[in-house]
Image (cartoon, rainbow over all chains, first blue to last red; front, side, top):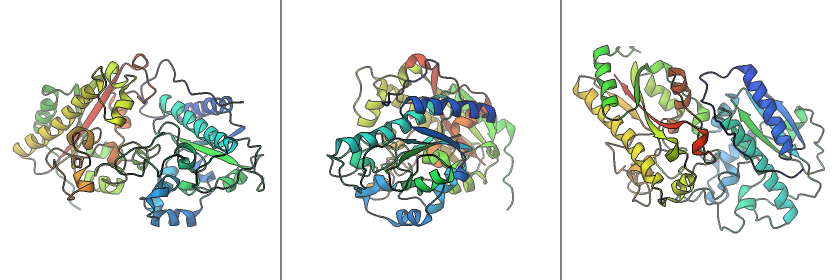
Length: 214
Length: 220
Ligand code: SF4
């Protein structure tokens, strides 16, 4: 199924002082259904303890100074433990993946010119940002989404460098582009294995994303 | 550590009144210990990346870390927390998000109108801090709403603290926003009983009753 644009609810309710766990569970279920409707092939409700981190990668990111590839490496300027601390503050999240029936070679942060590759990466970014937005308007204003791949290759392939990393500009696709899970130090494949999802085959491309909800 | 002294209720009431008489649509005296600080709030400035993240000395990844904010809060007993109401026709206007990120004024004037409301929050924070010192408090700390680059340095190309001499152009007025320092202003407002809505770029004026900008002044 093709991904559809997210439509905000007609009425937005005020933010609640405390989120009732039952209510959070029900909202997450709704978000999973929406994600499937927007084109996800599968979803899983997770807790932060289900995330598998690649600490070596986090450490590399924290010492990286190459601004040109910053969008792959958010949150570049943060101490290693900060992003982990933030992720562990969430109660729940939605891990989702899409069907990729094509070869998806790792092009690093080079521009992605192959139309099929581009469509696959765009799709995962769009679903993740749609789920994150839906959660936000449900009152889960701290919802945070992570997609897959390098957003510069997908949304800014004609630009010389990442616009968000250039001091005087902002991101060119703030409502679509999300940092990858790997950029946050999460190993998507190992996380999927831990969740016993049907998809992960190390020989096939696996595009997944994550939305943490509080 | 010696706990900070409890401020006299009459003095706190003077400050609360000051906020309301000078334009706040509501103000409360709160315990500093009730102010929630959360690392996720600061990350929300970066994921998805706000156009100002990395462009203003007070905005993430710069500005106060959550640890620094917690250390500051620990030095205070009470605070004035206030809000400035913004009509949904302004804060949820269709064109607003583009105008904000591009810095180009829209025909309806919503960008400048919102800027005026933000300026009011900055002014109230400054006013309360000044008054607090006048009536006998010996230290204050202020937090505002929005980034100071768009409000206080709108006409300047870059933030001087970040890209120039390292010194802020407006040291008296410029304070970090609550969210940039990791303070969960939404939760705090909801706990007090203020009706606050999640308003994002896709919002329509009809879908929310109103918007709200908030400011916080710690006194001790
Ligand atoms: S007031 Fe201007 S110079 Fe000072 S921190 Fe803000 S943007 Fe930078």
